[in-house]
Image (cartoon, rainbow, N blue to C red):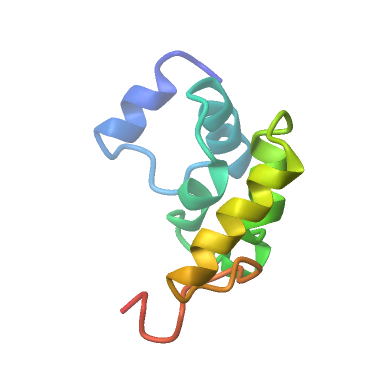
Length: 94
């Protein structure tokens, strides 16, 4: 990716950014690329591709003990959220 490309994105001179470039930029910035890719024209909703809370935490923080993952899932359940859910609750994204 050229150094000037992010600047072109900033000033709206790129109407359809390439997914690969967005993924590389996300990696450099240590960002999750899925929300960025979902913003691209014609890319749709990535909700089905998202992991649940426990698999996400296990992947993002591999050093986290299993007991911590269970405790986090318990807190999430206490607030009425299914820790295995991969998307928003009905009406939550409106």
